[in-house]
Structures are given as C-alpha cells and as structure tokens.
Amino acid sequence: MNWSVTEREKAMNSFRREMNIWSRFNHPNILPFYGFVLIEQSRLFLVSPWCNNGNSMEFLGRNPHFSRHKLISQVADALDYLHSGRSGKSYIHGDIKGDNVLISDDGKALLTDFGLTRHVEQVTTVVTATPSRMSALGHVRFSAPELFRSQRPTTPSDCFAFGCLVIQVYTGHLPYDHLDTDPLVLGAVLAGEKPHRPTSSNVIAAGLDDELWQLVDECLDNQAAMRPDMSEILSRLKQHPRFQPFSVQLYEQPQEQSSPSSPLPGADSVADPDLA
Image 1 (cartoon, one colour):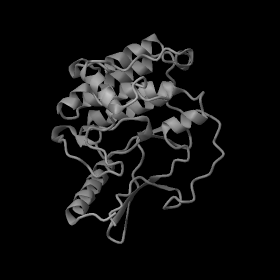
Image 2: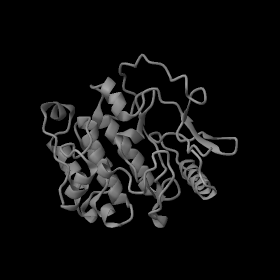
Image 3: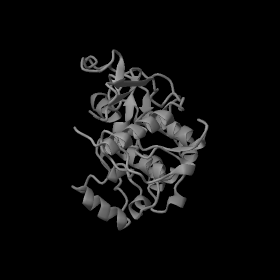
Image 4: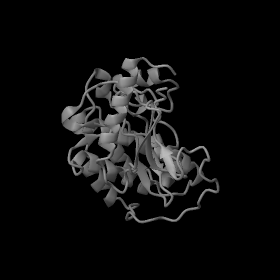
C-alpha cells in the first residue's frame, strides 16, 4: 500500500505512542512488550511473546470446559491495574473484546492491543492507524452509549465493554447477537437497549448465574456514573463461588504448533502498519 508522507508520519507516530504506553505496563495478565523491529525504515513491528493458544474465543472453542470465571477475573485484574495508576499513570484501554485477550501457554489471560489506550487525563478522540483501521470508538458492539454521543472514552466505558466481554466469553457470540448489523446495534444502544441476558442452559451451567449477571447488568448501565468501577468489579468476582486463585489450571493442550510464518522465533508481531 502506497501511503502519503503525511499518512506515513501519522502511522509511525501512532506506533511510537503505542510502544511508549505498552512498555510501561508490568502485570501478569497483560501481554509483555519485548520491543520493536523496523525494516527498511518503513515497516514497524511490535514484538511480544507468541501465544500458541490464540485469543480467548479461539481457546474456549477448543477448551469448552475451561473456567470462564477465571478468565474474566484475570482480565478484570489487568483492567484494574490500568485504571488504578499502578503503572505510574491511569489508563483507559478503549478496545476490550475477546480478540484482544490472548491465552498464554499455561492458560493465563493476557490483555493486549493498546493502540486505542489513553492516559485518563489526556483522553482525545483521534483516529489511530492501527492494523484494523479502527477509530477511537473501538468495536461498536462493545461501546458504551455515551461514546456514540461524541463523549470521550473513560474508565466507565471500559467497564461497559467488560460487561460485553463477559457475555461474549460465556456465550461465544458478540453482544446484541440478535441484531444482524452494526447500524441496528447503534440504533438499539441509542434507544437505551442493553445487550440481552443469555438464558441457555449451557451458559448458566458455565457460570453466568444470577449473581454474575447482576454484576454484568450493572456494568451495562446506560448511565456511566452508575457503573461499578474495576476495583469493585474485581472484588465482586473474587467473592463469587466460582472464583479460583490465580494459579495455573491444567487443560488439554492443542496439538497444532506455532505458525512457521511468525516473523521471529517465539515472537508475535502484534502490528504491521504496512507502510511500504
């Protein structure tokens, strides 16, 4: 793809910014940042550990009996770390969804993709040149109602997205799965409609019971000020009967090997802006 000088500079600035933010994080449930590779002064790769298990939804498809409560609790722990300022500043992730939670080789949730992450005190609604070409809104089906009204991402909008993530993790489907298109989702959100509660016996058996749904429903409140913060969410998840301490849980390892096309042995190219 041939980019103009302005487009190239904008993309390079976005990647530098993502590197600067990502490199500050040190948490067991955040994908580690190893560094970057610059090829021919035009192709920039962000480098992290290679996760053979793929993202959370791929992993759960192969391991349907894995503890979903453990997975969402670990994501909540990572988000609480971002929001709390323990990395030096408070950050908003801005793009929480199943694709952005990888699973380590020992079955640990790893939050990733910080292309839309913002420092809480310096939030802006710029468009970033991430590989997915997403705007600062993130995924429509995980976006809080206020984000459709030109308001900036906040920690409460992350909490709304976390509630949507819980639905996706327990059902294997995107929120608002009864609506076929994103414009229909947008209309439903602006009309005050929340994602529907999953009621299948399999979902309930997996752990999305009344107690957990009460928490999810609060995360999905149309009023940002009424949502619990991540500290409260994590605390309530830890009080749930299905909570397990964050130790390695054994599961059946997939048989497939790491893709031979990975750019570095044992490493995952998180993003390539294709600036050439």
